[in-house]
Image (cartoon, rainbow, N blue to C red):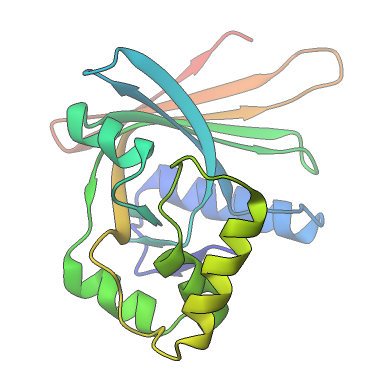
Length: 198
């Protein structure tokens, strides 16, 4: 589930809340899953992956990850991303373009301190995307971190990212492909709305 904290009252944010609630009411699984696509300017590679969006605070969309992993490296080299929700229960798609950066360390500390020890143990134990001999090694490292009893202190290599959209497209599917597409673009601090053909 996504937590809404003092969310912006601007129109695209209000529409997002309505669509989100409709998806929840329709029983959408993993309603918080969002695909993040990034471009690494150093390797010239494009990557996409799903992450769990944890909360929206005003106009900041926040998720957490390993700061040493490929995602973070891509964000460091190029701070523009695209983000995508698809909720099959309501046949709704929300596309975004945004700028991304790390959240303040104190905010990551507070979030980490309030998570379950089991989740923190994995964050502590995992060197995200590094090669390992076997899956058993992952389990062994996880168990060692969990049994250490010190799972409330956030490691420096783990924390939050925030992105602020400047483009949001709401796509609503239709059985005859008469799909509705409404786009909001933010320029000079104001959102402009338009519709696109399917």
